[in-house]
Length: 155
Length: 155
View 1 (spheres, rainbow over the protein chains, first blue to last red):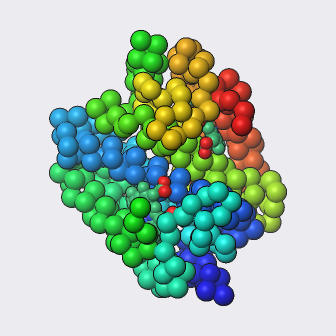
View 2 (view 1 turned 45 degrees about the vertical axis):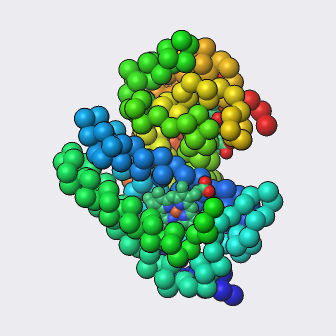
């Protein structure tokens, strides 16, 4: 019931992919962790080039990284939080908190905020303005963190 | 030496991200597996909607999936095959074959072929023409398989 509620909310917000393509719970966990991990690699590349080592700034690489983050944000990851994915299953460990399945409105709010920042990061990256990218990178990172603070267990 | 050679080839072909952002070998393996796994989820969604269950075709979802695949293809994953990533390390298992590090020209050829097909899939997905997407989905899948046949160990 609660899980259906979340999925419905996500679907209504255009965040969920077709339920018919639903993967096994362990694969859903694997895929969502993969999506986040691959985003974090791309966030790391942007951080490297606009904060840690600005001399290495490369517009094309930063835009390519921002494209991954925006595309991932818009890929309907809500579909990867289906029934049976609230706990470790089939050898896949998950750090999702129970609250994720209990507070669909809050999840939707934070997910939409993240999508907005990621889309904006992609737009700003296309301009090649390193200072503006740095600011928007910070906002995007905040939107990742907002979700983790509420819905991801510490390691 | 050989690994440097591969990276140089990939960098020359625009496939590698800045070497200064180099992650630890175990993280490189984690990130490349994550990138591939997340692509495979997105390939699965396209397959679902243009082959398995064409009645479920949704242009926006298919385009969103194609955007992930194209963005991942263009993200410079060559940088994730650095020194020390040819074997299991730090708890991360890898299925990459030694040939990957010995045949940089072949890797580059297959990687560029994949990027071409992924970019084309993104273009075709934007048209919403399900039949054309199906054809281009097939070509993209072939380009994944061509690389796996040569450079990925069976499970």
